[in-house]
Length: 220
Picture 1 (cartoon, one colour):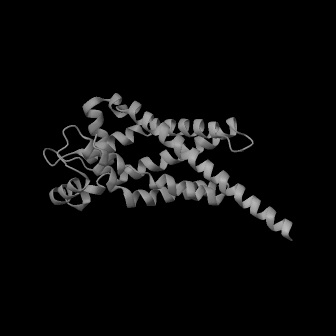
Picture 2: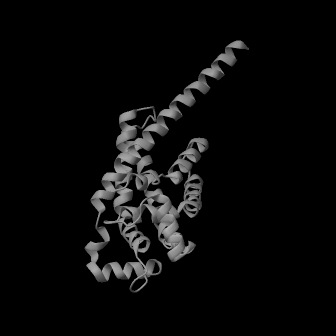
């Protein structure tokens, strides 16, 4: 796998959602809806990176780098090729983020009911939340990969419904979960680290704010 493909696989949607979570200070139903809408919006802006990443990760990929991949896709297939799987990406991101955040909050209620800074509980909850969300949305990820990596030869696959039918025709129900182990193994450390870093900085910032207020009260 080319290093460039790994570098462009950032998660701005997750970072944006965590930022919103910090400023909201409470995971209400309204906040959950805000998470989903923000995730959808960021997916629209960053959907093209999946096309480049997955084409560079293919076996015997013909591309020499990120810029070469972008140039070739643009010249041969046009700009719309970068958003061929956008509806699938959007359909996958909404349930993924919903499961991800709800599972994390549920596990925190079990492992850390006092909601204190506890690195081990944050890491375990984050890893399990990512694993469950990744496993549940693997069929959509398979369809997204099929849409993003198809070439110009042969019959063209268009849309989520067409991709679902094609996957089933080629491999039946088991085909929808091909690569689920790799997807879960990737997501577990990713979400564990993300939540651990988020909770650490939230703890540091909150502690600093409390100390600042205490100093102001003492000065008065």
